[in-house]
Image (cartoon, rainbow, N blue to C red; front, side, top):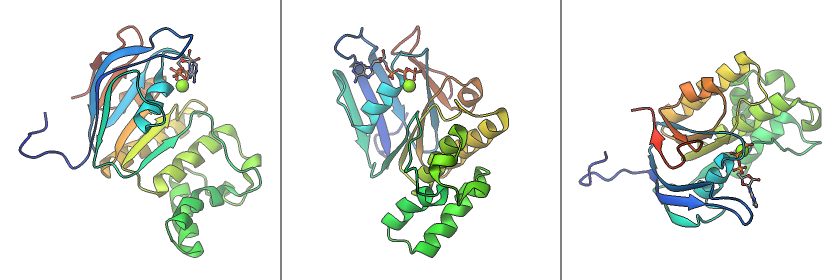
Length: 216
Ligand SMILES: Nc1ncnc2c1ncn2[C@@H]1O[C@H](COP(=O)(O)OP(=O)(O)OP(=O)(O)O)[C@@H](O)[C@H]1O
Ligand SMILES: [Mg+2]
Protein backbone atom coordinates (compact mmCIF):
# COMPACT_ATOMS: atom_id res chain seq x y z
CA UNK A 1 0.00 0.00 0.00
CA UNK A 2 1.09 3.56 -0.67
CA UNK A 3 1.38 5.72 2.46
CA UNK A 4 -1.13 8.58 2.57
CA UNK A 5 1.67 10.71 4.09
CA UNK A 6 3.66 10.24 0.88
CA UNK A 7 1.16 10.19 -1.97
CA UNK A 8 2.56 8.72 -5.19
CA UNK A 9 3.70 11.05 -7.94
CA UNK A 10 1.93 8.92 -10.49
CA UNK A 11 -0.82 6.34 -10.12
CA UNK A 12 -3.77 4.91 -12.04
CA UNK A 13 -6.58 3.32 -10.05
CA UNK A 14 -9.75 1.42 -10.91
CA UNK A 15 -12.47 1.56 -8.29
CA UNK A 16 -15.50 -0.67 -8.80
CA UNK A 17 -15.23 -0.46 -12.57
CA UNK A 18 -17.82 -2.25 -14.68
CA UNK A 19 -18.55 -2.08 -18.37
CA UNK A 20 -20.69 -3.48 -21.17
CA UNK A 21 -21.92 -2.43 -24.59
CA UNK A 22 -25.45 -2.41 -25.98
CA UNK A 23 -26.05 -6.00 -26.98
CA UNK A 24 -23.28 -7.53 -24.87
CA UNK A 25 -23.45 -9.07 -21.44
CA UNK A 26 -21.61 -7.31 -18.61
CA UNK A 27 -17.98 -7.79 -19.62
CA UNK A 28 -16.56 -7.15 -16.15
CA UNK A 29 -17.78 -5.54 -13.00
CA UNK A 30 -16.56 -4.29 -9.63
CA UNK A 31 -13.00 -4.23 -10.90
CA UNK A 32 -10.53 -2.71 -8.46
CA UNK A 33 -6.82 -2.31 -9.15
CA UNK A 34 -3.98 0.15 -8.92
CA UNK A 35 -1.14 0.60 -11.38
CA UNK A 36 2.08 2.22 -10.29
CA UNK A 37 5.29 3.21 -12.07
CA UNK A 38 7.83 0.46 -12.58
CA UNK A 39 5.27 -2.33 -12.74
CA UNK A 40 3.82 -4.32 -15.63
CA UNK A 41 0.22 -5.49 -15.24
CA UNK A 42 -1.17 -8.14 -17.56
CA UNK A 43 -4.85 -8.14 -18.56
CA UNK A 44 -5.80 -11.70 -19.44
CA UNK A 45 -8.81 -13.82 -20.33
CA UNK A 46 -10.45 -15.40 -23.36
CA UNK A 47 -11.19 -13.63 -26.63
CA UNK A 48 -14.09 -11.23 -26.26
CA UNK A 49 -13.91 -10.96 -22.46
CA UNK A 50 -13.10 -7.23 -22.57
CA UNK A 51 -9.30 -6.86 -22.46
CA UNK A 52 -9.10 -4.24 -25.23
CA UNK A 53 -12.20 -2.57 -23.81
CA UNK A 54 -10.50 -2.16 -20.45
CA UNK A 55 -7.54 -0.46 -22.19
CA UNK A 56 -10.05 1.87 -23.92
CA UNK A 57 -11.42 2.86 -20.52
CA UNK A 58 -7.97 3.39 -18.98
CA UNK A 59 -6.95 5.50 -22.00
CA UNK A 60 -10.02 7.64 -21.32
CA UNK A 61 -11.56 7.07 -24.74
CA UNK A 62 -14.71 5.73 -23.16
CA UNK A 63 -16.21 6.18 -19.70
CA UNK A 64 -16.92 3.09 -17.62
CA UNK A 65 -20.60 2.30 -17.05
CA UNK A 66 -19.90 1.82 -13.36
CA UNK A 67 -17.13 2.87 -11.02
CA UNK A 68 -14.31 5.36 -11.49
CA UNK A 69 -10.87 5.43 -13.05
CA UNK A 70 -8.46 7.94 -11.52
CA UNK A 71 -5.17 9.09 -12.97
CA UNK A 72 -2.75 10.99 -10.77
CA UNK A 73 0.26 12.73 -12.26
CA UNK A 74 -0.25 11.20 -15.71
CA UNK A 75 0.66 13.53 -18.56
CA UNK A 76 1.02 11.09 -21.43
CA UNK A 77 -0.74 7.85 -22.28
CA UNK A 78 0.39 5.92 -25.34
CA UNK A 79 -1.52 2.97 -26.72
CA UNK A 80 -0.09 0.34 -29.05
CA UNK A 81 -3.09 -1.15 -30.81
CA UNK A 82 -3.85 -4.83 -31.31
CA UNK A 83 -3.93 -4.38 -35.12
CA UNK A 84 -0.92 -2.36 -36.27
CA UNK A 85 -1.75 0.43 -38.72
CA UNK A 86 0.64 2.79 -40.45
CA UNK A 87 0.98 5.10 -43.40
CA UNK A 88 1.58 2.85 -46.42
CA UNK A 89 4.12 5.01 -48.27
CA UNK A 90 6.11 6.33 -45.31
CA UNK A 91 9.16 4.39 -44.22
CA UNK A 92 9.41 2.33 -41.06
CA UNK A 93 11.94 4.87 -39.72
CA UNK A 94 9.50 7.74 -40.38
CA UNK A 95 6.92 6.04 -38.18
CA UNK A 96 9.27 6.03 -35.18
CA UNK A 97 10.78 9.43 -35.92
CA UNK A 98 7.46 11.23 -36.37
CA UNK A 99 6.52 11.63 -32.66
CA UNK A 100 10.08 12.84 -31.97
CA UNK A 101 9.78 15.47 -34.70
CA UNK A 102 6.43 16.46 -33.19
CA UNK A 103 8.22 16.95 -29.87
CA UNK A 104 10.66 19.37 -31.53
CA UNK A 105 13.69 17.19 -32.26
CA UNK A 106 15.60 18.02 -35.43
CA UNK A 107 15.19 15.57 -38.31
CA UNK A 108 18.74 14.29 -37.79
CA UNK A 109 18.29 13.77 -34.04
CA UNK A 110 14.88 12.17 -34.53
CA UNK A 111 16.28 9.75 -37.11
CA UNK A 112 19.22 8.80 -34.90
CA UNK A 113 17.04 8.19 -31.85
CA UNK A 114 14.47 6.31 -33.94
CA UNK A 115 17.11 4.05 -35.46
CA UNK A 116 18.57 3.36 -32.04
CA UNK A 117 15.18 2.26 -30.69
CA UNK A 118 14.50 0.19 -33.81
CA UNK A 119 17.79 -1.64 -33.23
CA UNK A 120 16.47 -2.75 -29.82
CA UNK A 121 13.75 -4.64 -31.72
CA UNK A 122 15.98 -5.93 -34.52
CA UNK A 123 14.26 -3.63 -37.01
CA UNK A 124 17.24 -1.69 -38.38
CA UNK A 125 17.18 -3.65 -41.64
CA UNK A 126 13.69 -2.44 -42.51
CA UNK A 127 14.29 1.20 -41.59
CA UNK A 128 14.05 2.49 -45.17
CA UNK A 129 11.20 0.25 -46.31
CA UNK A 130 7.68 1.65 -46.84
CA UNK A 131 5.22 0.53 -44.15
CA UNK A 132 3.16 -1.26 -46.81
CA UNK A 133 5.99 -3.74 -47.41
CA UNK A 134 6.72 -4.83 -43.84
CA UNK A 135 5.25 -7.92 -42.20
CA UNK A 136 2.56 -7.92 -39.52
CA UNK A 137 5.04 -8.93 -36.82
CA UNK A 138 7.51 -6.25 -37.93
CA UNK A 139 4.70 -3.68 -37.88
CA UNK A 140 3.72 -4.74 -34.37
CA UNK A 141 7.28 -4.29 -33.08
CA UNK A 142 7.70 -1.06 -35.04
CA UNK A 143 4.67 0.55 -33.43
CA UNK A 144 5.88 -0.54 -30.00
CA UNK A 145 9.25 1.07 -30.84
CA UNK A 146 7.38 4.26 -31.78
CA UNK A 147 5.54 4.21 -28.46
CA UNK A 148 8.83 3.94 -26.56
CA UNK A 149 10.30 6.87 -28.49
CA UNK A 150 8.15 9.35 -26.56
CA UNK A 151 8.85 7.92 -23.10
CA UNK A 152 5.18 7.75 -22.00
CA UNK A 153 3.94 7.91 -18.39
CA UNK A 154 1.47 5.12 -19.14
CA UNK A 155 2.03 2.54 -21.87
CA UNK A 156 -0.99 0.49 -22.93
CA UNK A 157 -0.10 -2.44 -25.17
CA UNK A 158 -2.64 -4.73 -26.78
CA UNK A 159 -1.46 -8.26 -27.65
CA UNK A 160 2.12 -7.23 -28.49
CA UNK A 161 3.38 -10.75 -29.19
CA UNK A 162 0.35 -12.17 -31.03
CA UNK A 163 2.10 -12.26 -34.41
CA UNK A 164 5.65 -12.94 -33.25
CA UNK A 165 8.02 -15.89 -33.15
CA UNK A 166 9.44 -16.86 -29.78
CA UNK A 167 12.68 -14.85 -30.07
CA UNK A 168 10.91 -11.67 -31.21
CA UNK A 169 8.42 -12.13 -28.36
CA UNK A 170 11.29 -12.40 -25.87
CA UNK A 171 12.67 -9.11 -27.23
CA UNK A 172 9.28 -7.42 -26.85
CA UNK A 173 8.83 -8.71 -23.29
CA UNK A 174 12.33 -7.53 -22.35
CA UNK A 175 11.58 -4.08 -23.74
CA UNK A 176 8.32 -3.87 -21.78
CA UNK A 177 10.41 -4.59 -18.69
CA UNK A 178 12.87 -1.84 -19.64
CA UNK A 179 10.07 0.69 -20.11
CA UNK A 180 8.63 -0.20 -16.72
CA UNK A 181 11.99 -0.01 -15.00
CA UNK A 182 12.41 3.42 -16.61
CA UNK A 183 9.41 4.57 -14.52
CA UNK A 184 6.40 3.97 -16.78
CA UNK A 185 3.14 2.32 -15.81
CA UNK A 186 2.80 -0.58 -18.26
CA UNK A 187 -0.50 -2.38 -18.85
CA UNK A 188 -0.56 -5.17 -21.40
CA UNK A 189 -3.51 -7.18 -22.72
CA UNK A 190 -2.18 -10.60 -23.61
CA UNK A 191 -2.94 -14.25 -24.21
CA UNK A 192 0.77 -15.08 -24.23
CA UNK A 193 1.94 -17.08 -21.16
CA UNK A 194 5.49 -15.73 -21.64
CA UNK A 195 4.25 -12.12 -21.48
CA UNK A 196 2.06 -12.99 -18.49
CA UNK A 197 5.13 -14.44 -16.77
CA UNK A 198 6.93 -11.11 -17.32
CA UNK A 199 4.14 -9.22 -15.49
CA UNK A 200 4.21 -8.11 -11.86
CA UNK A 201 0.45 -8.54 -11.52
CA UNK A 202 -2.41 -10.06 -13.51
CA UNK A 203 -6.01 -8.93 -13.94
CA UNK A 204 -7.95 -11.98 -15.09
CA UNK A 205 -11.12 -10.95 -16.90
CA UNK A 206 -12.01 -14.59 -17.54
CA UNK A 207 -13.73 -16.79 -15.01
CA UNK A 208 -13.04 -14.44 -12.13
CA UNK A 209 -13.86 -11.11 -13.80
CA UNK A 210 -13.20 -8.35 -11.35
CA UNK A 211 -10.62 -10.23 -9.31
CA UNK A 212 -7.06 -9.04 -9.32
CA UNK A 213 -4.33 -11.49 -8.51
CA UNK A 214 -0.74 -12.50 -9.01
CA UNK A 215 2.45 -10.56 -8.60
CA UNK A 216 3.56 -8.91 -5.42
N1 LIG B 1 -17.95 -0.47 -29.50
C1 LIG B 1 -18.51 -1.67 -29.27
N2 LIG B 1 -19.83 -1.87 -29.43
C2 LIG B 1 -20.40 -3.08 -29.18
N3 LIG B 1 -19.70 -4.16 -28.76
C3 LIG B 1 -18.38 -4.01 -28.59
C4 LIG B 1 -17.71 -2.77 -28.84
N4 LIG B 1 -16.38 -2.94 -28.59
C5 LIG B 1 -16.24 -4.23 -28.21
N5 LIG B 1 -17.43 -4.87 -28.21
C6 LIG B 1 -17.68 -6.25 -27.83
O1 LIG B 1 -17.27 -6.36 -26.47
C7 LIG B 1 -16.65 -7.62 -26.25
C8 LIG B 1 -15.24 -7.38 -25.71
O2 LIG B 1 -14.42 -6.87 -26.77
P1 LIG B 1 -12.86 -6.69 -26.58
O3 LIG B 1 -12.33 -6.21 -27.89
O4 LIG B 1 -12.62 -5.86 -25.39
O5 LIG B 1 -12.39 -8.19 -26.28
P2 LIG B 1 -10.93 -8.78 -26.04
O6 LIG B 1 -10.93 -9.47 -24.71
O7 LIG B 1 -9.91 -7.73 -26.28
O8 LIG B 1 -10.86 -9.90 -27.19
P3 LIG B 1 -9.61 -10.41 -28.07
O9 LIG B 1 -8.81 -11.33 -27.18
O10 LIG B 1 -10.28 -11.16 -29.20
O11 LIG B 1 -8.83 -9.22 -28.55
C9 LIG B 1 -16.67 -8.35 -27.58
O12 LIG B 1 -17.80 -9.22 -27.57
C10 LIG B 1 -16.85 -7.25 -28.60
O13 LIG B 1 -17.50 -7.72 -29.74
MG1 LIG C 1 -8.51 -7.43 -27.76
